[in-house]
Image 1 (cartoon, helix red, strand yellow):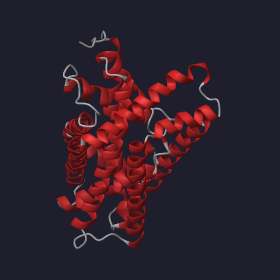
Image 2 (cartoon, rainbow, N blue to C red):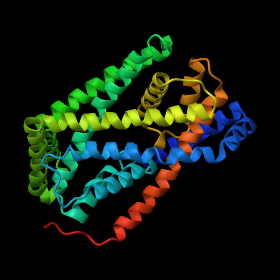
Image 3 (cartoon, rainbow, N blue to C red):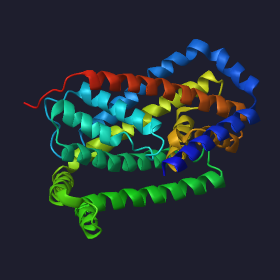
Length: 330
């Protein structure tokens, strides 16, 4: 599996190279060089997206987030987890999720069952909010920037699949999916000598999640709301980049572009960091709306540069958190 993921990573870099070749290295470099310092504000938009997403996560804990866990720490842990999601090439963009739960346990004594439960729950609110975000973008631009048949069909398929996945995830988590996983492991002798201990952990995880869905629907809505605010903040970034590149678009159009880019990122999750496939996909989206492919590639590269800056910051934060002494639970 790891070898396959590494092959996909190589494929992604090849697609990126081929896309730049098709557009032209000189044209791309001249566009980026002309912007220079004007790109700096983009670095400061992303922290707000992280903040809203962190609030979405804070409302996803089965119990109220312990008072001794400051929002700042939750924010930093989320940055670390998302960074590792992007750079671990064989984990389907999920490699940082266990690190989030482990850092919460190590630094603040939050039980792993509760940490993992919050991560699974926030993924359901993530899918629900993304569905709302994409549907809203399509409806907001039906008259001003209607989707081409190819894009419309792709979006409809995506929404159907995403909706089904979100529904199945909520149902599975509510009914106790981990208890079933443990039972399956017992059948095939996966767990070994510590089977009973693992069974208790799985049961605890199920109970935490079920408690959330049966007694905390308000927090589910708040988590969905803050995740949606995170998506909407991304529209500001799209609008800013488009204006820097000289594209005359409104806020509704920027919303649609951001929605389509997020659809693209989800669809290409199997390629680590969506490298190459994201850039090529953005170019194709721009071409579908009759825009210059050079604009599309410059836009994609700017987004990628911002992503790399925050990945570097995330790795630095991880080193900082790992070196700090654990904070014992009071």
